[in-house]
Image (cartoon, rainbow, N blue to C red):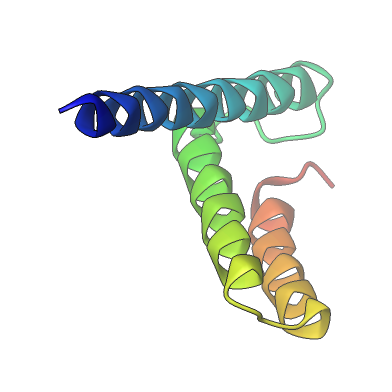
Length: 88
């Protein structure tokens, strides 16, 4: 029973950390939009969800032994999305 309580506590902590990281990403995007680095019509919540998902997936991939080169390809592709919304 105590083991389940510990696991539940850890799960809640990890969920909170992911929520906080996504909030920081959203805050960064809002700043970029305010500074006219991102288009005014960019859906910042969707972008925050996207980049948080990329980061979480990369974390899992790194844990599972994917090479830095493979992860760099993911970063390169994710940054192509940034350029879609970047003010030119």
